[in-house]
Image (cartoon, rainbow, N blue to C red; front, side, top):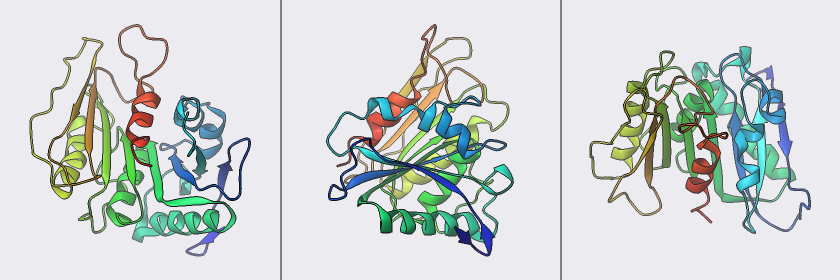
Length: 244
């Protein structure tokens, strides 16, 4: 499609037995800096395919997935152009496919996490929830940023690329927006091999905030101890699946 006078591309994945009369979730899956949508689709370049979510989806709602390409392999969102693109993308997909407009989600790692945060800020009334994986509040911006949005944040305590302080800052914006009670979230020590999950209390109805801090660096697929598979897909799905 053309957005802001620029040609933009994206991939769409529908369920195998797609039913044109059944409303599905819509899940945006945004790549990191230097990554591509095709890597997210194929599960290469350090990604699980579609961020590893599809194998966990076991309910009747199911999901349609979209992997868009950022400009210059990133999401600088200059003048809000990426928000405009993704808003147009959602409109285009929903014109062709059956989507439950109350169940729009976005996830992404690094720059993709920052862009998911930017969407939560700018499209708070249209995005049901985001899962921000090792993002940063500055790199894609946060226009408006005052609406409550269900928020899952995840970050490594030893992240040297985008330090965990940025992850905490993004999380804290939505703790405030969602009316949650502020509290000190536990975080694992470096070398422990653990991750710690905090669910904040007293958030406004349907706007929970969950924070996962893990022992590890800047990665979309952190492991707990010697686990063979990352906990990220299952935790992301656990967060998204509560909304139906």
